Image 1 (cartoon, rainbow, N blue to C red):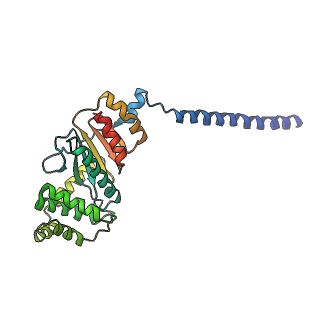
Image 2: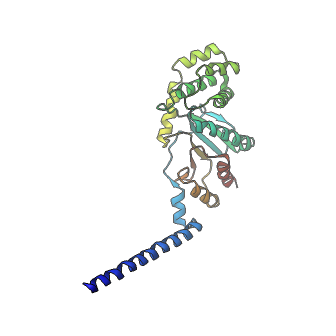
Image 3: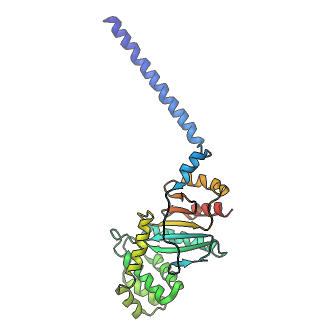
Amino acid sequence: MENSEQKSAFTIPMAIVVAALIIGGSIFFGWRGSQNPRIADTKEQKAVVASPSISMREVRADDHIKGNPSAPFVIVEYSDMECPFCKVFHSTMQKLINEYGKNGTLAWVYRHFPLDSIHSKARNEAIATECAAELGGNTGFWNYLDKIMEITPSNNGLDPSKLTETAELLKFDTKKFTECVAGTKYAEKVQSDYEDGIAIGATGTPYSILVLKSKINAEQEKTLIPIIAQFQGNISVSNDKTKIVINGALSYEVIKRVLDALIK
């Protein structure tokens, strides 16, 4: 009995020491690994970059386009006008277009993705922008959208009277505008945008696809790898390397890094 107790007394502390050494080693080597992420390995690159194929509707004449339609880079945004993150991202896109759109490098396509379950006003607001486009053309659409995004408090907070007031401010025929908004003429178009967003994997807003005229080459991919690794879940590249998913309201600085990596 005495020997058995002595053996147990010796075994338990030794087990504690061994466990401590194992845990300590794991922490040490784990810390070292976090300081030196291995992103140069080819297999790891593919794992970081690869994203499912994106079968989105091609940009066409009836899309709302700001900038050069033939630009080498086109950001197609799926947006909800009552989404507070979309409001922020709208300003980001305006800044990017001011920088990259003037020389024809970047274009911006806006598509509707109203989140009816949380923003019951968003779909009607989307229809209002289509009526603005009918009365004021592409310029009228963007001027109207810009103004609504500027004044909305978001989260379903926009007073519906502001839709007509903004149309009046922009010198639209308010009678035709109100009749258009009250009708069903553009309900199908808004729904079509929404369904296209669902088809490519959008579940929230803003959700954007950066469409490239040319496939990402090896040099561009090398530059993109650390950016994508840093923002996994928010940035990914399609398998055919012609599209980049931008999921969420990423900042101007982040998207600028992506664009500069592609341009250089």
